[in-house]
Length: 163
Image 1 (cartoon, rainbow, N blue to C red):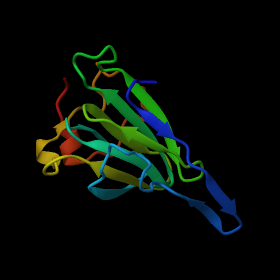
Image 2: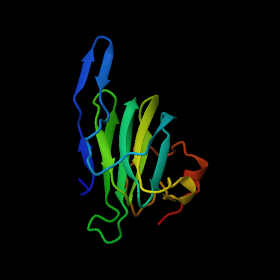
Image 3: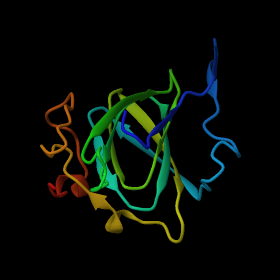
């Protein structure tokens, strides 16, 4: 496990109707004030990321479907620099991942469709895509063993640079 990441397994309720779980409630993280939420939907074999900024905390979960979340420590002075962590997220076994600033993240949709949820915390203005760092999903320096050879990528992710 990369230091700095936090995985939270919330309790869930399941019956014949489906699942019920809490993703966040006030007081869960006393020092982190969340600003806004974002969702993305993806189809199978889509990779989104690796994206990073240097001030945002992200609380991540998979609301529907199943994803492979990959997190990379981008802190140059860290013992974990460029080390990766893989985590399977699914609505059937709900958990949250808290990602600190200076960590890049990407996710691969493993199910037919998936819904990915980010809860963002940052000071000042939001760092949008143009000011975030984007890295190649298959950069050999990360040594990520993706279970796919030809993912569906956005223009941004196709044009990302290697380190």
